[in-house]
Length: 351
Ligand code: ZN
Image (tube, rainbow, N blue to C red; front, side):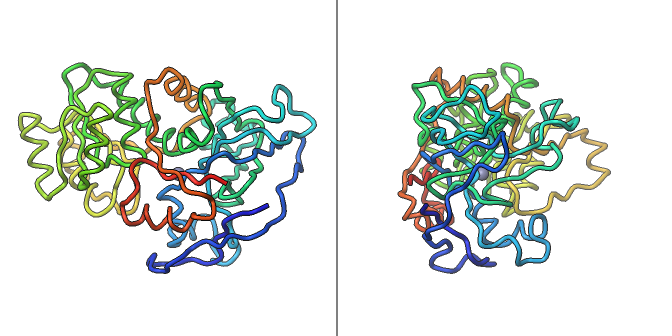
């Protein structure tokens, strides 16, 4: 099959192309619960840029030369192509979305539904071959069947970007009361979904911060109440909008270039700062933590159950993923556009 393969890291993301279109062997059923999915769409994620620049090297490739070549792509949807001998209830051609984290299913974390923390796991597209290709191997435990109204290429990016935004927004929605404020930092691939999930699940006022007018326009379409241009005065602007107290919840989908300090500064005493993006350290003193009683909550993708919840919202038209389609052959263009802030919503590769 055809696949876009990452053959070398690029620490400063300055190369003109990062992946190479190659002929690679088709994925094969090896275990009785394996499933092969024919890719309908693969989301292009900032994590892919972080993989290229080597941010993940220490975690998943400690010797620095065993992971590559790698087929990236962890946000996948498509159609069932082939199933292992123990798989029931799935047949060739069924439209599906794929939860990104493969787990064994028998450890305590898995049995409690904490899919991102299961033992003996694999993460296609990050530590083994993913969906920048014509087909992907996963496990039956990762499959969520799609309602007929949802096309794989339109929902692919829900499997990580959407799911991560959903999980963070769901956590916040359980605490936010009508009249309270939620700040969203970054209205890109994740942020624009979080706005819609919050709209669907709580009645808080939503304030969205972004440096890009395109992203602010998208936030407006998604139902934001206040738009704040990230021009250096965003903390002050949020304080004005919250009577000088800050917001009850702040969701940071950027977490680099200084947004973590700003995000915490916008969080009200006893409020919660949800960190979703990554790229810099969060610096806060123990003194500040105890005197403000602010909470800092990390977010890692989401569970299989949460992916089904998100598909219900999508099927009901409560969330809509803004996508920009690229052919698989144009993967480098999609990655460059993402790196240059030129993607509205989410880039998706179509084989
Ligand atoms: Zn992702």
